[in-house]
Each structure stands twice: as structure tokens, then as C-alpha cells.
Length: 161
Image (cartoon, rainbow, N blue to C red; front, side):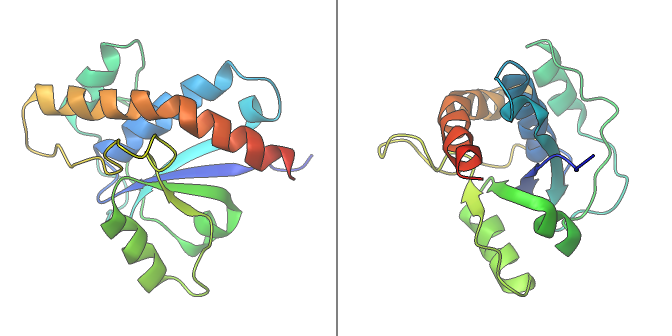
């Protein structure tokens, strides 16, 4: 059986934003028809160490919306993950730039998590690391706000395959 198409969410250390984005996107896509609900969603960091634990505030922020990410462990972004991905969603332009500078050939399918939001929306999701729970909740809410636009983009992307 063919491996399902992969979506990668990316932040810096893969312990705050990208694990939250991974869980939120996986949850949203699970309610969609095929092929969206079978997409493989993973997260990684452009400067991550392998197997670091997820931030406690990220766990708490998602627990408040019914999602459990406490078992998540970090992983660095690799060429293999990029090669398997049909789309990579970064939290900031600096993450996208780091990917474009680090990997050869330069991946073309790298977007911001909030890139498909209306023009007036802030496209970047700031790093809550070390901040209070309220910053993690704001970060989560910015991701939740972007999910419908991501789902629409992925519908278009997968219909072309």
C-alpha cells in the first residue's frame, strides 16, 4: 500500500508551535473526506534536537481544546521529511528562509501556516517559548484561525494530484 502524502509543520525547536500546529491540523483534517483525512501530519524544527519533550504550556494550551500532545518528542527537519512532503507549513519567514538556505535543491512547497489568510491578517506566528500560558493560548488561537484556509489550500492541492 502506498504511503500517505505527508504535511510537515515547522518551527525552531519542535517543542512549542509546530507540535501544536501538527495536532490542530491533524484534528481538522480527520473530519474531512478522503484524501485529506488520510494525510500524514508530522512536525519538525529547523534547529531542533532529537527527542526533546514538548513544552508543558503547549500541552496545557491544547488540552484546553481537547487535544493531547504530551507524548510528542522533537525531531530535526531532514531532507527526507521535505522530500516526502506535499506541503511544509512554517511559523515564520525566518523558518522558510532557513529551509531555503539549508536544503538543496530548494523545496518549492514551503508556505507559512497563516499564508492563506486574508491579506490583512498577520502571516507569522510568534514564538511563545518561555512565556506565560496566555502566550501559548494566543499562539494556538492564531493557528486555529488559520486552519480553514489551510484546509481549503490542501483540498486544491490534493485534487491536482
